[in-house]
Length: 377
Image 1: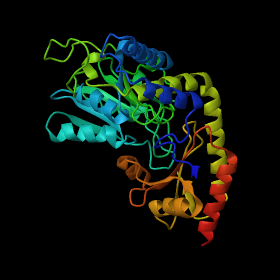
Image 2 (image 1 turned 180 degrees about the vertical axis):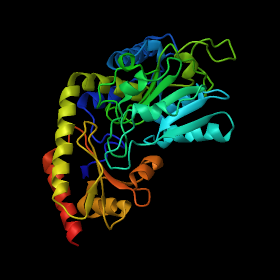
Image 3 (image 1 turned 120 degrees about the horizontal axis):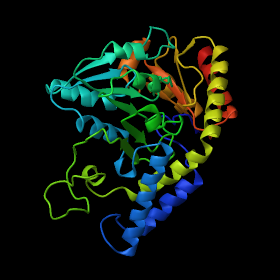
């Protein structure tokens, strides 16, 4: 199968990631849960991963790098652990349900209020602007949450410019599920207070890997309680990080994969970006020659190209590509309903093609030929 669904999860992993995962399964020791040599060796690897993520994302300190099983868990910790009664939040309409649903839960529980920042216009190339965010600020605004990149069409908001116009006391959350491993995201340089990472997408780790990174300006309450391997005499969660937010055994294989993925991307990021920009350009050029298809993406380093057929429902089209042509794409709403509403594609969704740097133009030629045949049917 030609795999073009890397925005959902990475299809191919580097050899060093696969080797690290295989080796980790053979260890069978629990990091942080013992003083014997194997447990200490595993704990050292976990620490190496914290250090690598801290360096790669120019984060604030390794102890404020918390491992999660995915970006959704990281976002829940960031949102539920930060917001208090009476707080106000601003989000963009680009956000994934992993941001919107925790906020909606808090809103319906009477804890917070939130406003959704619209796109700058109704066009397919619209984006969120700092000016639009500014108009929604209130005296009680506690948090602004802006994605690093839209998982629907690859649009990249100007997060650095948005941060600059925010009051100092407002916290800035960046969902980097699609941006991590594709964009050069530097937390301190961009003024990001909380950043959430999906390890299994652009970071090239395996499923079950994720992380939350946060600054000294943030005081997070745990949303999960249990054993941490530290302060075991106390019935309360530890009052220090990362232990206070990491209840239960970590997925050691997932952490190992994220460590090697971070190292791999850290060395090759410019080449990865160039390849993804080239592939999105190539597909967009090909789609321009086809009738009955409307494109909603521009060339981007996140490797995402989304389009619709003027007469066929997106999930049906993605199903035909899979069953008849052995090409994996994704149709539908991509867990981001407000973005589809803004783009005018809420009824039928979009077909999303998402590349990794392992994909090539020959595979795109196969996709384009399939779309021609479907067009002619």
